[in-house]
Amino acid sequence: MLYLIGKNFEQAWGPLRLFKSHSFLLALGAMCAAAAVLFLLPRLWDLLPRDRGKVLAADGGAQSAGKPTGAGFLFSLISLPVALLVTPMNFMDAGIVVCLLAVMLFGYLDDRSLEPWGELRKGLLDAAVCLAVSILLYSELSGGAGGVEMWWPFFKGSTLVPWWAYMPGATLLLWISVNATNCSDGVDGLAGSLTLISLFSISVFLYVVAGNATVAEYLLVPTSPVAPRWAILTMTLAGALAGYLWYNADPSKVLMGDAGSRFLGLAVGTAVLVSGNPFLLLVFAPMVLMNGGMGLVKLALLRIFRKLGFDVTIPGREGAAPGRRIFVVRVLQRVSFPLHDHFRRKLQWSKGQILMRFILIQAFISPLLFVIFVKIR
Image (cartoon, rainbow, N blue to C red; front, side, top):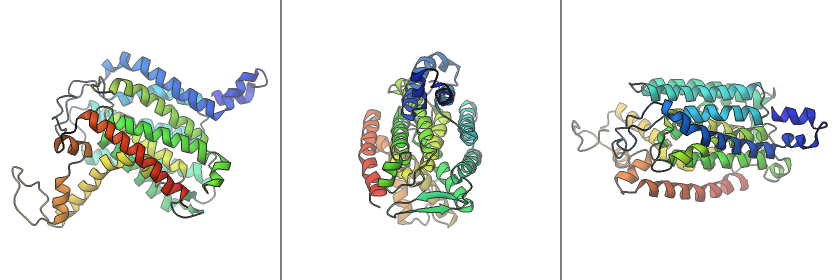
């Protein structure tokens, strides 16, 4: 909306040309979203459901029980008017925003439900939304060229990916991003802080690299005409998340719940796909993938081994019977996921130690991976 005002009325009043500046809109969106969430969230969180405590948490869920949860419902809705104000959206962008709100709503309904939704139900709903986003992204990014231009680590040039390859791959990446972020939510501020770094980093990349013809040419990255406006949207969401984290710092007053983690996971995955390189998810969200995503891998492997007839029960647990057990299963059973639970239970790390160390690792690894995946081509 502001972009159109600047475009159509800059001749009437010169300062309105600022509204045509993507960098100005990016900063404005982040600040306004953060301020709006900071002001409104504590005035609205009493309307949220109360956390019943996650039994699988390292402390049995005692510390989170009774706190307002599902804050993702509030900070996503609060950020929406700001995003509409500062982001020059088209029809496809608006459709993706609707999908973001849909996956948030599914998570919020799960937060409110007296009986948690089953894995299959949540997984299928996530997959449906991710497929819808993939279709919209393909329509926007292909531009009628018969495919989406994508670039890869270690190789110069780019590849035109047809719809039959793009949509399944994009859907899988989005689904992994959604569920890895959801699984990482369990320590005050952890998932939010890691995702804030991811959103900020992706925004900078979309604006400075993918959206800048000079820098993109230097790094051999295809220039994306949609990248600058997605940088604005992503930074606006980062501002809203920062406002939420103000109240989620340990000891937290409010929790994001599945509503927030699923919303943020889909936002990160979508922004990565806009960049044109799906492997940048490893660059911008390494600790989220390691913390929550590896739990998905472990779960899948254990189920496969169980189907093959191997014993995958945890030794010493009540009801566990001896059976064929292979080395891979023994290794998997020694590590708890999400990884933050392993460090809390096995190494006795405090929540503050987990938060700071995970942030430091991501802050150290991401630049190195960026050089490996982007510069070394």
